[in-house]
Structure formats: structure tokens, C-alpha cells
Image 1: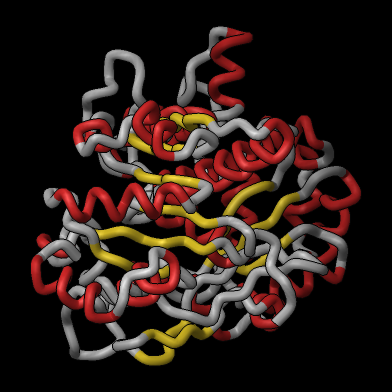
Image 2: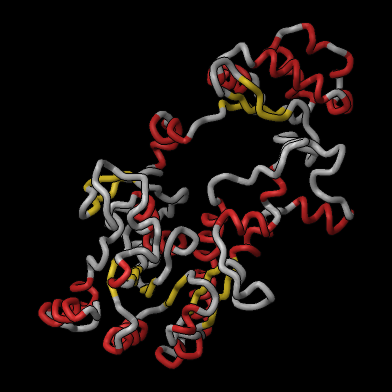
Length: 412
């Protein structure tokens, strides 16, 4: 196997769920040795994904959660009961030989474990400590605990998704967990780069809610610069856009149940090509002769586009428009991307991993490739405490008998 970019990095990892575990998954895929630490006394309940759905078959248990497997591939898994003095000693030894300590507990939890940044620095002076929680470790909300959909609501994202005369719809799945993981991975890499240059470690304090606020983008800019609120009268709804103005531009019904077509006419050339493909008299309506007219009569235009597209199959229609140079595509379901799209398959975006209990399972890969030091995902997530002998033996020098004795005593 070719070298991977982060093979020289070791991470002492307390992250869970997705906002934290998703970050260290990226680093593990690029070769970092990520040692995931869990509490043996709560049978994996800190991370609710460990035994949660989806499942590969009828079996259930703390090692059989599909989401947990997806977010923890390529990691090593150990257990430490930090209520015991011996476990705390072993953790200190592990931190001494690690580059990064990462966690996404609520603010203050790590400090109560005796693992504040100041205490970590005493163990290893150049350690990088990365904390990722809902509101960070400063400000009036620091003591609040939160969850992905709550983060989205507080950050302003939920409000942005409502339709006219309808309540705020929210984003459904917890996209902020994904975004939090992306930001956390980038932050770890920046801190590692700083240490490479200066030799200095540091504390990376991250707040998922603030990460969510950055996704408001144009809405925040419009309010800051122009004093204009989101979802005001006259603003476009759904997938229409005024930045830059285009028409038609949106998602339109296609033939069949819950089938859709996306298209965008960027300029007059696109409109002329679209009109030629449609070939119906309404495209010659004087109201639609130029962009200003199409925007002024956008409701009428969208009604005609929808009536035309509703009678046609989405993939065939998209192919005809693409051939004419008009940006268009069928709105695809996730399963169609996995099993039917040849481009996605060629990227290797859903590799198969070998899991100790589940067997061979497909997981999410990474949407990026490095020509010299690419990622690799072949090993499934660790079962609870699966690598105790490997980590405590090879890295800390304990014998197999010592490891088993500590497990029997409830230390591991």
C-alpha cells in the first residue's frame, strides 16, 4: 500500500456521534493512528450510534450499529475506566506519545476528568487539544448542551428553509454534525501545521453553533450590509435565486411519483436553447423575451415549465437539455447515486470495509483523492475495547496477561 499523508500522526480520541467522530474519520482515512477511547462501564452508551440503526441483518448489539461503523472506520478502539487511578495513569502514558487529544463533550466535562488544557500540557508540552461542543468554552451559552437540529435552529439555518405561509421547515437530518466534523478536521490540520513550523501545541476551541452561523452566508451579508431580513416579501422562494438572477431556475416536477428535474437558464443563450428543446408556443410569449420579463413573470413562467416537464421522464429530459447546452439534471435519490451512477462508482466513494462482527459492509468514503498520499478505508470500526491488547501492549509495553487482568479488574 502506498504511503498515506498522516501516517506519522497519533490521535488520542474521545470523540463520539458524528460531529467529532466524523472529523477523526477523515484523519484516520489518511493514515493517522486514531485511538478511540471509551468507557467500559457504560457499554458504549456515550455514543448512541454504537448500537443504533441501520443494521446489516437481524442482529443487535453495541458493536452492530451501522452509523457508528460508518463514522469510525480505520480507528483503533480501547476502553479505559477513568474513575480508577490505574486507568488515569495509562491515559497519561498514552497522551505522552500522542500528537492530538480530541473530544466533543459538553463544555467542562473534560476539565472535570482532570484533563484541562493546562493539565494536558503538563503531560506533553506540545500537545494539540481539540474540543468541539455546541457553544464553545466562552460566552453566555457555554454551559448549554445541544444536539444537531438544535444547533441548526439557534444558528439561523432552520429559519432559512421555510416556504411561504409555512412554518420553518428545518433541514431534516443533522447536517450541522457533518459541518462540525469538517471544521474540526480542518482545525486539527491547521494546528498540526503550526506545530510543525513552530514546535508549539495549542488548544483548538470550536463551537458547532458558530460553524452553523457561517453557513447563512448571503443572508447574513444582506442583513449586515443592507439591513434586509431573510424571507421578506418579494424575496424568491425555494430554489429560485437572485444571486445572480436567472429564469427559469428551479426544481420542476417530472413524470411519475415524486420525480423532479433541476434546470437553470443562466443567460439568453441558455433560454434560446431551452426554448428550442421545448418547442411549444408559450416560449415565444413576449413576456419571456428577455431576462427582465422572465423575472417579472416568474410565477407564470414556472407554471409553464412545470406543465411541460411533468409530462416527461427526468433523466431523458435532462439529457436533451444537456445536449443543447442547458444546465439540467434529474433530481437523484441517494440510492441512485450509490448503485446506478457510474461516475460515483469510478470515484470509489463507497468502499467496502471488513468489520469484526458485521462482516463486509459498505461505508462512506472521502470525495477527494491525493495523487501521492491518498486515503484508504478497508477496516471497519472497532468493537468495544477490540484493540486493548494491541494498544496497551505494543505502545505501552503491557503483557497480554496484564491487559487481561486490568480488564477483569474493571480498569479497562
